[in-house]
Amino acid sequence: MVSIRLSFNPQKKNEPPRMIINTPATDQEKISNLYMFKNLEKIVPPKEDYLSRHKKIEEILQELDSLIGLASVKKLILELQAFIEIQRKREKENLLTDKLVLHMIFKGAPGTGKTTVARITGNLFKEMGILKKGHLIEVERADLVGEYIGHTALKTREQIKHALGGVLFIDEAYSLARGGERDFGKEAIDTLVKAMEDYKDNLILILAGYKNEMNWFLESNPGLRSRFPIHIDFPDFNIRQLMLITEQMLNMRQYQFTEEAKKKLETILTAHLAITQDYNGNARLVRNLIEKVIRQQAVRLINQTNVTRNDLMLITWYDVYQTAELD
Ligand SMILES: Nc1ncnc2c1ncn2[C@@H]1O[C@H](COP(=O)(O)OP(=O)(O)O)[C@@H](O)[C@H]1O
Ligand SMILES: [Mg+2]
Image 1: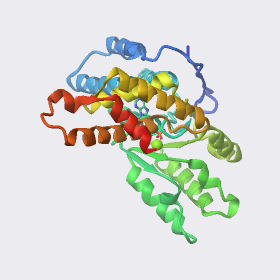
Image 2: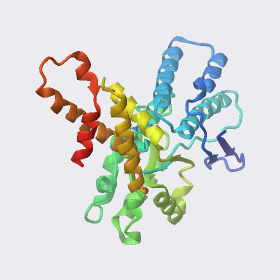
Image 3: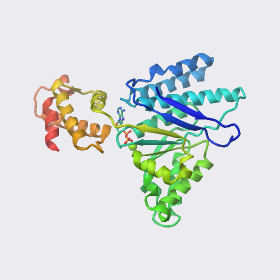
Image 4: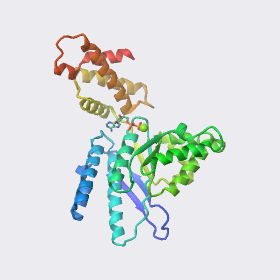
């Protein structure tokens, strides 16, 4: 079970609710048939636009659910969705509510699905009426920080403008604090904090990066930490999950492994995980491998006469073997 603890304090109306989230590992990877969403359906009398919105939300949650692993991430997004809906209903009944603060911290290695989940969350919040557009603008230090005094605020404000109505996703956010007090990164942080105030109903900020670096960043910027109540961990995938991601990616591209090809790829991935323990590239590594394998298949088929539909779909042991030879 994932537990999510929210503390509300009616005396401090202006403070965001604090969320403390425990996400122990679990084998249950699918989000329980969207159970919370189904319950909500019973409470609200269906109207035309409600139904189409509902359908879109369900589609978005299905997309989230189709991601391999990420059990705790999926549960948390679902809990957020339920929480927001219920806060709204409480508001209608004139019950005490807290202002929703939905800025988030995503902690995890590259290729663990952070950008993918951020994009899905943006779409979800759009359909829920939290964001007007729900699009994702992904930036990094170089997009925000300039070269002379004043340049940084200008560049950062430009990105904020693009992101209004959606999500501003800042990858490797800790690099903004890299140079300390005198670095222009500080100017970017200050500009972002101001934007969070100015556009609090129309912009969600997500800061992403490696777990340890993000923890350091938040500890050295306590003012920032209090503005990001939602923290989500993106764990590395294990070999079983990487294999499932491989098959999903191949199927989406209308390719298929032979059994031998699959075994060969598993061997390659396992070896890769063993030598690069700290950073294994995760799902991105899989995507790159697949793209190479597909090129090797093409090289093999190009000189073959009578290529069948099946040949065009099949990835053989030899294709995977050749890919490994290339490295
Ligand atoms: N859980 C998952 N299941 C299937 N594919 C995934 C999963 N997580 C990531 N991917 C795929 O891996 C690639 C990298 O993911 P991305 O979200 O960019 O990772 P990050 O932002 O953490 O670096 C994308 O092509 C994405 O579709
Ligand atoms: Mg990313």
